[in-house]
Length: 233
Image 1 (cartoon, rainbow, N blue to C red):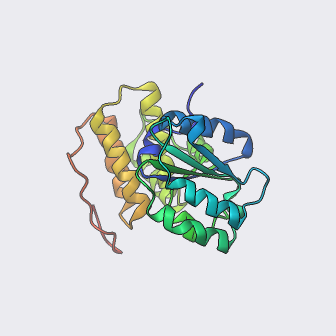
Image 2 (image 1 turned 90 degrees about the horizontal axis):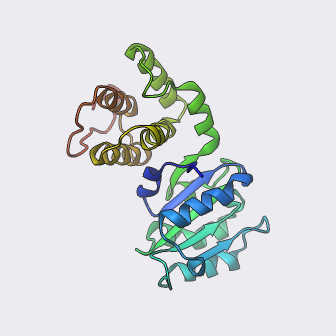
């Protein structure tokens, strides 16, 4: 079974929000359990009955602070994350912001209507947007004019899909190319930078594309300027 989410995504934090149709949630859960070596005894889930109560979120917060019993990590899963009300969300905010070292949170939602306070504390992956990216962006392995690529990258950033493009490239590299540690490190770093700060995402993506397609080594560290109206990398 091929992973539907690139492994680089799981390296961008401790709390993850995935927006997709519910029929894909079992596979996403399986991938997460495998990625973090979580045993069935260290899995806690709420929201399966289409609601998320305050009592459930309080219990999940308590469990998040307990030590894994058999696996390397404890995994706390919240289904229907778009159904969290403000009281339930407030119960979770602190543990999402300061998650224990050996705990990971997986939030699953069928829509983008997740409270901003929750979204801001999670690495974000939208499988619905990913399908759109996969259909619009020519793969890395396909020769193409850079001017065309640059225009497509600009539209991707304009539509708020920059991190989805990185995920698409990451998945392609992992599955069909010969990834090296520097390339994967770079993809992880720029994904984190684009999702957490106001960097010049277009310039970062263009640079990344040129480095990969022309097999140019990436810098040892990512240095960027905060985007201003005329800012550049």
